[in-house]
Image (cartoon, rainbow, N blue to C red; front, side):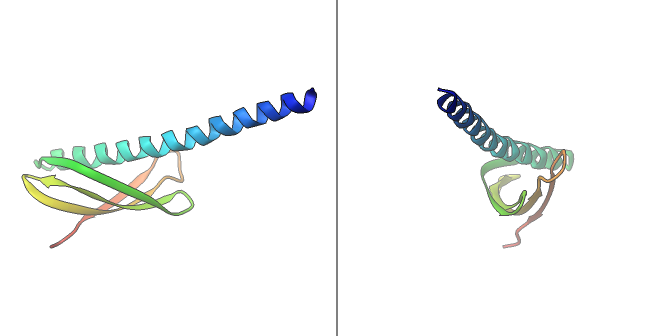
Length: 97
């Protein structure tokens, strides 16, 4: 009986931890999007984000592409995100077409 109870507790703990990681990546995506939009607003621009794709590159680092419209023109940004600290660092660069 003890083994069954311990196994159930471990299984539930694993599920909670797994779900926590998924939510964390969704929150990271939302925060990255919000940060870039706010930066562009401070520069006097209007950015409408249509998509943001982030992929893990190594550890808690991500690379990705943000697509959208900057002042009505289609744009793409190349992103690198470092989520290893208590907060995250984002670097982005507007792709030149």
